[in-house]
Image (cartoon, rainbow, N blue to C red; front, side, top):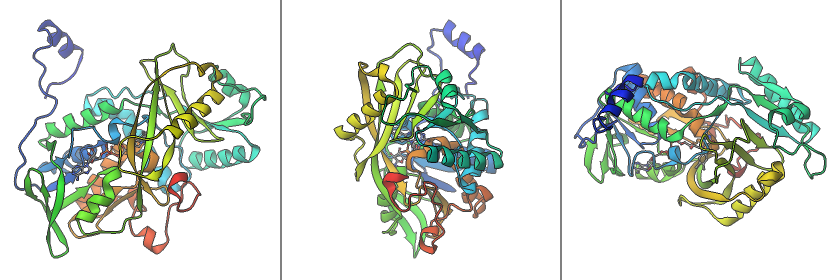
Length: 419
Ligand SMILES: Cc1cc2nc3c(=O)[nH]c(=O)nc-3n(C[C@H](O)[C@H](O)[C@H](O)COP(=O)(O)OP(=O)(O)OC[C@H]3O[C@@H](n4cnc5c(N)ncnc54)[C@H](O)[C@@H]3O)c2cc1C
């Protein structure tokens, strides 16, 4: 593998940048592997990387129906945080945060991981109480958390309107200083390059269209590029979880597919140097290194497999953004897009063995699977390699929905729109 460094940059600059090697190969699929991972998103690629790196399992194929990174990994608003409430989630996302902190070095790929902090705004005293409860839950688990006054928020985010002449005045906020953003494409490319370097075959334009089974046991997959067998098949297809599970004969999943949109404005001079979320509705906003404001809000509110959304959400998020930052009112939107979210019914994920022998499942990431990418890959690889969950994902079972052990992180019950 070409090691990326200042020296390789200078060397390649001297030869007109014509001698860079491909970051990953484009192999033909083999007829058999030890493990097949369906889905070349962040989670699938990270799983393959940790299978090879942590468990020495290198005869692995990642099958991606489109181009690498064309799913949610390349479509999200890139927020990374571990400010959860329930112990199972807090521990898991904090493990992810620790992996993020060393990821650029581990993968020798610049993730542009920027720990610029996240501030969740509170607009009522009861919301402030809920934030102090969450902050304390985080501190108990060893996660950084700070309660902020309105004055302190105003000092940290100068463009934010903190006056009283508004329907939802800000009364304070909860900050996680180690939270931040990362470059989403780099995460896909970095894990792909790392996995490929260990010998993993990343096979693009290879859609799984069926499963090969021996009785109930899954023994391989049928793809648009032929049949491939493996004793272990991991599913990591985010918004396409239900259709792919259906191909395996599992017809009912506690997951709904919804569209979530993201928006980017024209570039501005530095204005917002942290991530801010609005507590009176749903909006999260940060500024990219190129200067564009990146933001998103609610789901579109209907089930869909389209990677694009509709206009009401434009109005909804634009109104919230201008309420927070009135000085943005004449800014132009440059781009928007949508991704298909795998909304679980309790807002928490699934990383488990089964539900069929030979099958392993990673799904239910709701709004939050980007930040989970390193830990999801790490835990899914562990579960596949050892045939049992790690402590960190032991609670993320599929059967919790059948035996009533949901992890209701949003405290909202089985309503995907509220997770
Ligand atoms: C607009 C938006 C904003 C978001 N913002 C954030 C955020 O700020 N922070 C955060 O933590 N999370 C965020 N998320 C969520 C996060 O992006 C996802 O939860 C996460 O990326 C999902 O995991 P993945 O990367 O593996 O998914 P994907 O990249 O979607 O990977 C799944 C892959 O499976 C492939 N596939 C599907 N079916 C098949 C098949 N039959 N055969 C082969 N391949 C198949 C797809 O083509 C796709 O590439 C956001 C998502 C969206 C859409």
